[in-house]
Amino acid sequence: MARALRIPQEQRVSCLRKRNQRSSL
Image: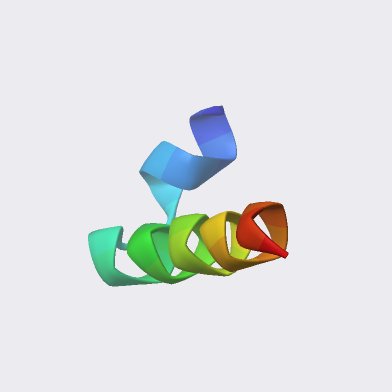
C-alpha cells in the first residue's frame, strides 16, 4: 500500500482501473 502512495495518483488510478477491468471479466 505504501508503494501506491509513493507513485503518482495518475499511475495509481491506472492500476485500479486495470484491476477493476480484470475483476469485471
